[in-house]
Amino acid sequence: MSHRSEPKVTYKRVMLKISGEALMGDQGYGLHPPTVQRIAEEVKSVRDLGVEICMVIGGGNIFRGLAGSAQGMERTTADYMGMLATVMNALAMQSALESIGVFTRVVSAIPMDQVCEPYIRRRAVRHLEKKRVCIFAAGTGNPYFTTDTAATLRANEMACEAIFKGTKVDGVYDKDPKKYPDAKRYDNVTYDEVLQKHLGVMDASAIALARDNDLPIIVFSLDEPGGFKGILAGQGTYTRVHG
Image 1 (cartoon, helix red, strand yellow):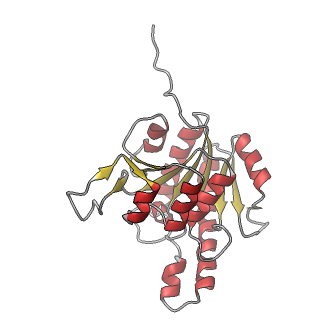
Image 2: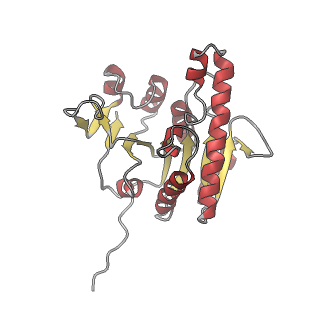
C-alpha cells in the first residue's frame, strides 16, 4: 500500500520578504486582519515541513519614507517613520502566527524593549534553530536603505539558503504583466540582467548584496494559496534570480 508522502523540501532555512502592501488585502491602506491571517497560515504550512523561516515585512501600507520625503519631509525622518511602520506590521504578523501555534519573535534594528527584542545576531540564529519564526523589523536601522536591502542583509547574516520574495505576480516579467498582455515571464534570470534591464525585482543595492554573496532570490505570487509551500517542494510557478 503506498501513501502520499510530504513533498521533499529543498531548503533548510529561508527568508520570506513581503511588502507592507501585501497585508492590505483589497483596502487601500493599513492592515487587513484576514489577509494577515492567510499569510500566517502559509508560513505555518512551510514551518511544519521543518523549514526554518525568517521574515522581513515592508511598511508601505502605513508609511513610505520615499513618498514622505517627496512631500517635503526630511528624508532621514521620513525613513525612520517608515521603519516604525514595519514594526507595526511585524507585530501584527507575530500575533497572527502565535494565534495558530507558531512561536514567533519580532527582532528590531531599532531597540524598543517593551515591544520586541533588539537585533543580536547570535540570539536570532538560536531562535531559528529552535524552530521559531523570526520577523526582522525596522529595516537595517539606517535611513536610505530599503526593506529589500534589510531582507538581503539579514538573510546573509542568518545563513539563509534563499530569499523568497512574495509579490502580486508569479515571477519576474520583461514588463508589467498587468499593463501588457504580451509580457514574458522569466524562469531564470541573472542578477546582472535584473540590474541592466531594470526588472524591478528589488532595488539595486539589495540585488548587488545578493549577487556578491551568491544568495538566490525566488520571486513568486503570494496571492496563490499554497504557493509558498508548493515552491519549497519544487512545484508551482516562479522566477529564480541567481548568478
